[in-house]
Image (tube, rainbow, N blue to C red; front, side, top):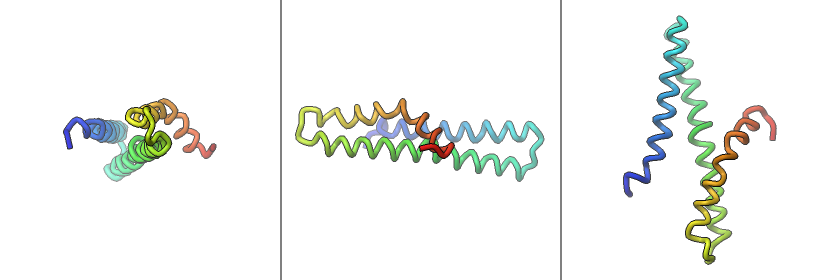
Length: 104
């Protein structure tokens, strides 16, 4: 596997790590105890893993897989599934927000 195929994963993990460090630093600067800072770090990590990595991965993977089946043996089979996955990305934040608020 080529390294460039893993670049988006590295960016996502870097984003999560940066947010964890940022939120933990803010908590520490506000005088939160060490246990409180650890709790902030843990909560931020879990939230970011779910909201920024796992849920988008599952949604995009499912979309691409569905379009692979749908477009099998057609002229669009080569790029169509990737295009469908990319087309889903702008809609993910609103959908995740509605799920987080308990609205389907």
